[in-house]
Image (cartoon, rainbow, N blue to C red; front, side, top):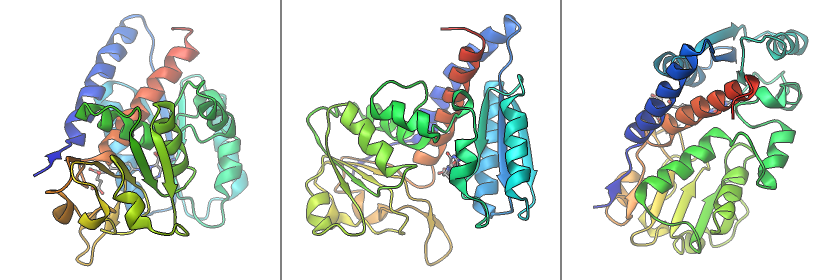
Length: 284
Ligand code: L34
């Protein structure tokens, strides 16, 4: 039986540390604010945004939620982003993705001030990550790194395989593993011999968005298996990209869904917001 990595516990530790720092800042009269913008009524996004608000409350940030109707126009959304860019109470701005189809993510993200871009999705922040000189790391990949670290397994020199090449997870994940001197392979829908490549991985990160695609024949005995997927199975139950039941004996360490990467994404958002707040107040 593999060790199950408890994302809730690790995220609680991260948030506790942030809570301490936030209360010290408050004593100095410094308050930190996060604005979360959600457009439309995607039920999954609503849950994630709600969890972000709860985390803000826990660590002591002011949270400003903007729930806009699905018909919101690009001009309206850009006007809100501009307002938040210029609002001194707001240290971090997050526009929850996916946006309704008529809105172009790229245009919106390009208009968030890079020093308030706590998702690290703006091209300036993406570029900084590429060269290893960054203030913010993207929340999900950064959370994955924390979960790997929680196992005590060293990344340097290991075979690391990332399944998925999105701008939000796969690509930056590969970069973060590379920064830690992992030997990194990125797999995607055109990859040949996917199973063979994955089964050579000491550290496997699955971020494809296909329910239970990674079965035990994809993993190496004793591997660290991190599941970024958030899918619904045939019974409508939340599940990851990894078939947890099938893999839990063979893996050395494995994350569950829920309770794995999801809570860490949120903890890392809190960390980035604290960093942004400190930067805006000239601390550190
Ligand atoms: N802009 N859009 C922006 N930033 C992000 O960092 C995200 N992401 C992804 C989707 N869109 C985004 C999130 O917030 C995914 N994501 C996210 C956040 C939280 C959780 C999952 C994904 C989460 O709380 N997961 C819980 C279960 C939630 C449930 O019950 O449905 C868990 O334990 O995994």
